[in-house]
Image (cartoon, rainbow, N blue to C red; front, side, top):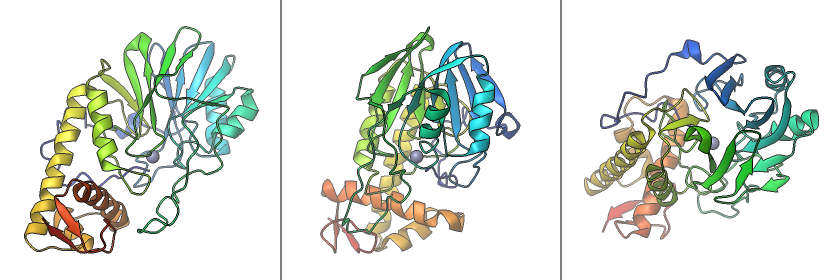
Length: 313
Ligand SMILES: [Zn+2]
């Protein structure tokens, strides 16, 4: 899950990698992005998925497919068509949101390739904010669960898992050493800021994962939605700055007497698409959980919840 429209107040963001030519993001078409990387976009465009989920084909002849996307016959056919005459040896999954992983098993059956990737989703029960993780594919079960720094050796390419919790607790990015690029899933995208929605999403973890990526050598990212992110390390630092500004804006609203999340969202996300209000509310909640843990604000519920009233400490 991602969140277009959450880009309100992104004035401090670097903008050179944010320009999108949608004609180059045509669902179903095969687009070569580099000697080792091809992209096929699924036909699931929405306010949360931009032009649709990006599936990536890595290698030539013997290939890996990253993020098969939704369990959609037309997208699977487009992927199989794109690799006609080649052999799919591995299927990789960045995280278990329903727009990324449900196509993995059927593609595995069609190709005989095992599913490698993130851990299965562990539902969070009895969270004070209610059941908020309905966006996860709970049927996903990898054949090989990859942990941080686990590497997959393909024919002419190496993909190394980088555990990047925050958007999803099981989220992995995959570094492609031969091209010094990174498949960034939904952790870093150019078209929108990433939704960090509790309980599975975690703002402190997200910030730590951004820092981790900024310290890595890759400067080109292939995201789960939208065009490649160029100048990626600079962009990642911009994302971190943006989140700190968002945190400051929330704190300023609370100091001004805006006590609840609905009021804060209305004041901060001016002109927000109504379909994205819930995502924005969860994003503010993620900040408030982090800020409560750090002692910056206090919640009337003790823990940070969607319905609590907040005061600055
Ligand atoms: Zn996602």
